[in-house]
Structures are given as structure tokens and as C-alpha cells.
Amino acid sequence: MITDFIKEDHIKVGVKADTWQDAVKQSGQLLLAIDAIEERYIDAMINKVVELGNYIVIAPGIAMPHARPEDGAKKTAITLMTLEEGVSFGHEKNDPVTLIVGLSAVDNKLHLETLASLMELLGNDEKLQSILNSKTEKELYTHL
Amino acid sequence: MLRILTVCGAGVGSSMMLKVFTQQILSNENIEAVVNASDIGSINPQDADIIITTTDFSNLFRNTTGRVLQIDNLTDKENLRVQLLQCISEIEK
Image (tube, rainbow over all chains, first blue to last red; front, side):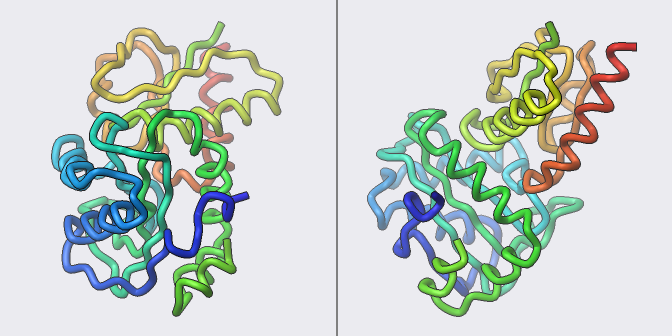
């Protein structure tokens, strides 16, 4: 179950972000708020994109910023953040991004089933629209 | 045995998703293959018959002998299935 893993306090809706860096940083701060990461993990999330490109934009409108376990992940967690206005990651097909799936992983196993279910959920256009249109965290949570 | 490598930047996110979806697809089709996920820094492109990755890395594998599949949308498993099966049938020819 996705909701075994993503709780209401893992969600933030209608976030204002000016740039992709700002969006990733705020997604990191949400992971920090639930004590899933050390603060240095946030910089690593941004640096991965600077180093390796915008491969974290995993689908139209959706980015999944994350770093490696040794970059300061304390526990495995997934957060969801919707943006008030889309930001550009410089991706030729999938910009603008309005949904940020923050990920911290302490190994490469625990989160897989949840992530796979989440991908299938987000692949359903109707569900995705309900998530993007949610006005409150509580409302978004009910769509998971 | 077919060797498939899924690749992303950190080795814990999209490459793992691609690995899970690829295994699901292959098992539904009764195709045997070794599927490994890896980060971009620690792969050897020569070790794979098929490399599956998100768009941005594809040009890093230009010298590989394997085939490279670019997946722009991780939520679209059907697209992955179609591309993967087509790729495998071309290799088997």
C-alpha cells in the first residue's frame, strides 16, 4: 500500500518555487522535516542534477530528485509536493514539472514496491490530475 | 542468456524502477534474462545486450555494442513493454 509509506506529513501542496533548484531544495526540506535525511543530502540532490543532467525528470510533469544512501539518507522515505506553477528542468519533452517526488533511500530494496505502485498510480491520467488539483494535503492523501 | 542493464544517476531511483518493470514484463512474457540496475558511474556498457535508461544518458553509451532503449516516461509501462519486446525480437533475429 502506498499509504503505508507516504503519510499526510510527507505531502505538501501548492508550493511556490521559482526555479528547479528551489523546487528540489524544498522537496529536500520536506524530507528533512520528517527526519529522513541529514541536511547535506539536499545539496547532493541538487548536485546530482548539475553533474548528470535532468534524468530525474521521470515522466511528463514529474521529477524524482534523490541522492545516494551515503549522501546523508537516514531512512527510506518518499514525499510528494505539488507546485503552484510548473518549473523548467530543461527537459526537452517533460517540462514543465509540477509534481516533485522526493526520495531518500538507505538501500535499494525497501522502497521499490511503493515506488512501483506510485508510478502506476501516476500513469493513470485521471488520478494524476486529481493529485495535481488537490487543494490540501489531506485531499491529496485520499487519492493515494 | 540475455543481459539487460538499467541505468540512472544514483542507482536507487529510476534504474531500480526500470529494473522492476523490466522483470515484470519479461516474466509475463516468459523471457529469461539477467536484469541488473546500476548507477552511471559504475557501469560497463559492454556488459549488456540491452541498456535501458532515461533520455539524458543515452549519448554516453554511443560506443556500446548493446542496444540502448530510451524511456522518457517511467509511468508508461506499456511503452516500455513495446520497446523492450521489439528490441529483443531484433536481437533474436
